[in-house]
Length: 236
Image 1 (cartoon, rainbow, N blue to C red):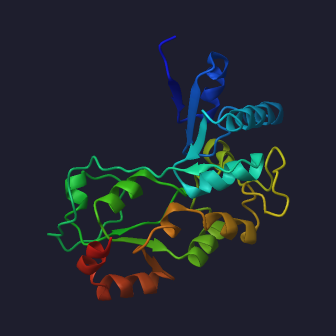
Image 2: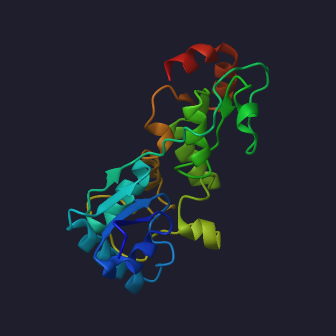
């Protein structure tokens, strides 16, 4: 068989198809790895297979964001490799020629770089467009951890944080299986403010330098007025 390795991104469960071939399996999780394995028996079986893969040095289990790395570790005990997305394909860089700030989801890359900054109200913990915008050196404004925790607890703004939210529109209190790390709060408990804050802290936008955090809408307005965005861009 003329194959050296199989690479699995989304869903992670796809890797189970390649295990019998005895080749390197490279798994890179990007969004809560249990997709299509929601039933406890299926999920636990996936965990067993991931553990088997992790014990073979020719295999790699990774995530493109810290949240999913910690999420897999919570349920399996596996120390996952962090491989952030590079996103160097946009072919444009920060060059503000307009005065308006952006708070809209879809634009051409060249349009994005023409604005002074982009305001984010995150709908998920790892956003590919944010990787791209950061790579283009665009200044980014994001709610502080305390503010996003409050907004999510009260309004469920990070509405793609769990599969229950994405697929069923409900906020769960408990995962369908137990985690390995008994001293850590359940990542799928969206009704506990402490758990929400603990897990949101692993979001991409709380890991990177030179992100601008706002504590309230008033604070956001103040930062839009007073921040030297060109200087922020040069630091990135």
